[in-house]
Image (tube, rainbow, N blue to C red):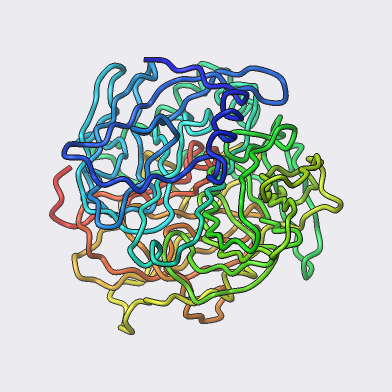
Length: 502
């Protein structure tokens, strides 16, 4: 089944929902059987122009899934997108063959086929996205919300804000513009991310020299204590908040003095933002789905693939309250509007009054996990160098380019520490599948940081982040930069447990 879903139809849906967010969260009891999730194509209207994109439709006809407290993740994924796909449950820690990554043991789902996933989920704000080629850029992504009993007892209205970057050009064309390769060669190169090499393949460099990264037409602000960064590989046509731009934003009806839990998901393929609450003040209480001690503020950085839960207490007066996301290094923005019943909603420009700085780790430094790792000496300490550049457009981990990599071998029960060292002038949001890790040091400064699944290594040569995790989920696990084009250009490796057959 192929569904045509325009922004105009979404407006009607939002209006009928009254006090619910654009993507309301269902609290219905778990069904006797599996939940239906459909990968499909749909039509989206972006600034008055139609585009054909992918989508992930849940059993209620809306994007993604919401699970009730204690509900099992038992999902039948039907592929009606007309092409092979596989969906990764980002931030969840299922058995490795349920992770939604295209290992040889878990190949993509053929068009017209389906696959059952069944595991106990972790409560919090997560998301799902394709791990097939560059489909994520074409909006094969959606929220995955797992409610907890504690959250339900808060009596807060829940609002999801999911961000995307959007281009009318195909992802292959975008990648070709970065790599300066013909379209056919790009297509073949991207397919590498769908096929893990045979165990006999050894580590090898591609032989391509890594030049100093240049901007490739991207913004390159300097300063920030003397450092220079390269930002924004791609000039996008639009930025979306719940599939809409500020030309026609989602308007979520809220009550005077209302209490909200704003679940922010950065589902962008290659863009990082500052979340701006405008006249409101919020408290970050969870990062990547895991609880942290509250951090108050009005503006928060969010890297690619990260999530933030922000508690907001509205004033006891009517009004409209824009919540925007400003692209780092620019004044371009997207967002949604929180508005009390009957309040006048004025147009919000997609241009912010001032440029936002590069996304940094100022929030990361302040986050403290409520349930950190227990103190313990590391059994394995490993340093990974992040390298690459814009000319040629190739990105590596320890001088190796996916799929020609040597896995990092783990033993079950180990405490593992990974030191990430950036040798480039671009930031890299690094994501580990199948585990949560604690951020324990930033640029050599020890912290008792958040439990996460994605951490930003700043775009500065010599920038360092140290993470620690328990090797408690045997399998084969991808570790990669979550900038989609960096990953596709080689910036991915494998963490493999000993004894796992390949």
